[in-house]
Length: 192
Image (cartoon, rainbow, N blue to C red; front, side, top):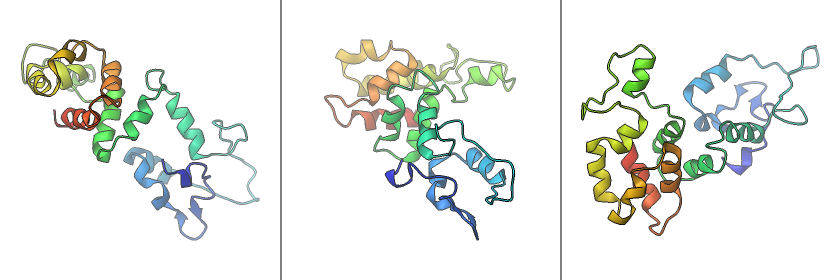
């Protein structure tokens, strides 16, 4: 998040003649959120009796910083810095977003498709043996293991292949003895 807009209010992000200054924040938010914002009518003036109060701050005013605090505390599994690790990665935005989706277990796996009634078989289409969940696609499938076996040092493989999803992500996104590892890991996950 650029420091120049961290404390911005809606008033700052709006021009009376042209509406919202999308260039200030549109690159920071997913398209569905941008559409929700665009659907809201923002009226500024004393003639209106209703007043919107932002519950995310002590003064009732909206700021980007207050939203970040809410997002960071949204899930206990990401509130301890994993969120920050992801968005500070020196990787393309699409890769960081993919990792963010992964931390929330939001990849559309066959297991998720079955739960939503979009598929009937939760098994992996590549190996045909296991249920296709996020960890299976990215780490546990025999084809993913082939990739990781070439990238992960043998001494670290026992730990690498046994950690739960968010612990696995956190441990591989942290700076390690190999400074390039977080980028290599992110790229491999994205391509798998």
